[in-house]
Length: 116
Image (cartoon, rainbow, N blue to C red):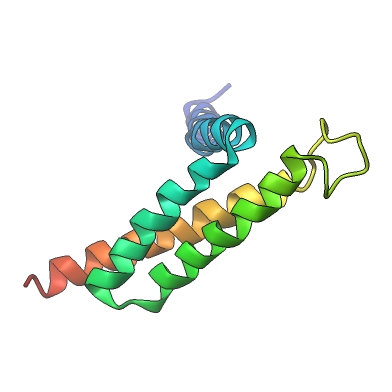
């Protein structure tokens, strides 16, 4: 195996770990305790309050919309009884993570450009 291919394999592995670890932590806590989704929602609402950037408001609203959905799944209202296999989370968690990261990056970039 040449060095270039080994480097690409290492980068792919490191990238997948960097994405999988936060998603795993998020999955563990929010499935067990859905009210914990209020923490990132409140944090992103504070970012919106400070920066008035719409992406932070959208991210906060996404987390607030996720809260009743996850609560309904925990109470088995929104699932047919077999809620152990949650394929929906393969779409929901990456979307929540991406919109949250975008809000944080936009907030930080505005603070670095025009500190007040």
